[in-house]
Length: 184
Image 1 (cartoon, helix red, strand yellow):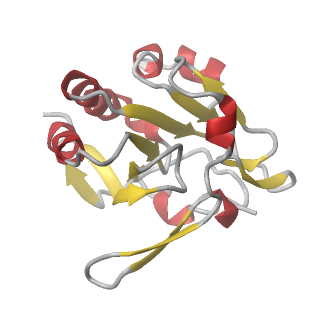
Image 2 (cartoon, rainbow, N blue to C red; image 1 turned 180 degrees about the horizontal axis):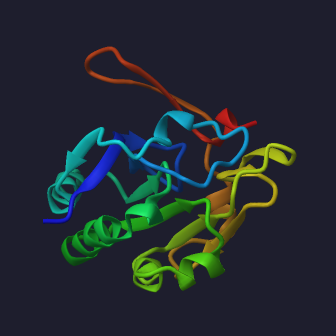
């Protein structure tokens, strides 16, 4: 079984893509973007190892979310597990998929399984974070990052209208700050 090294999971968010979305943050990133606002996701050491199909099933059961956003860490550094997760999402639902990656679209296309991941993604926010070009809106942490609409599910205006910041309070009282305004 291929497993996904998970950093965190938020069942519902409005600050990580259009509409109400589940958010999956993967653990592990070797890109080393200076000033990254999520450095606790960089270590590839196992954090919470999950079955991608089980995680997908959990998300699909929530009939109120319209999609799932995958961030990190760097999701493409777990390409096999990411693909298994996205295959399950697509096979069992009409949920949209938004993927954040530090890789460019061209780099992803050249990665093993990259084109298969892209084939199951509606929106890609791509490019390494550059702290010299802070933006913190429209799902882009820095101005060099690009939004790629890989299907006709959304318009760029819908993606850019995503709220830049959100405070989520879990049932255990844990507070999660999320959104691209955290980068600026």
